[in-house]
Image 1 (cartoon, rainbow, N blue to C red):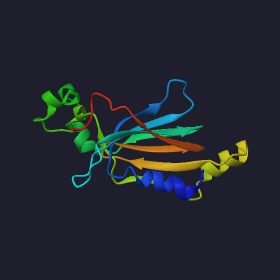
Image 2 (image 1 turned 30 degrees about the horizontal axis):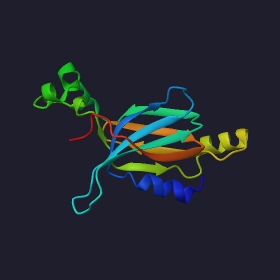
Image 3 (image 1 turned 135 degrees about the vertical axis):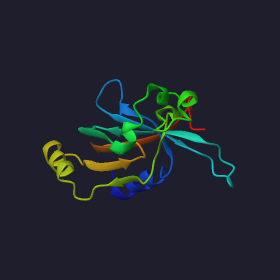
Image 4 (image 1 turned 90 degrees about the vertical axis):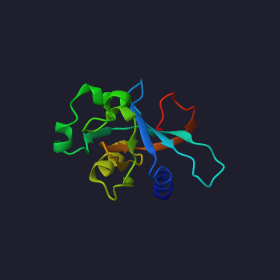
Length: 155
């Protein structure tokens, strides 16, 4: 995949909301489902977009929520918006994460270069940062497609 096209695809979801991520059911490819809110001045509706990172040889996820916030975010009531909205802690129940500061390509990634050499196809490393998770994905191709909205979207 062309690096410029990859960066453009990543730029298009800047400041969206990640509403789901993980390996698909056959466990080779990794998907990130992003909700894109309609611009106030545009006629386009809100949409959901599936980013399918194909041939994903590495997927690492860790928290971006600081320990002091985690300490206040262990209450199970925070997993439901209705019961957690007025509590002091991270409200997991909003069911989405801000895609900010966003997604970036790791230039000259040793991991991607190693996989490219081993398999004979291009690999890329991307970091995706949200207000709750950081993802690092190493993959070969990216497929982007609009999808039917899920019943739980940011509101």
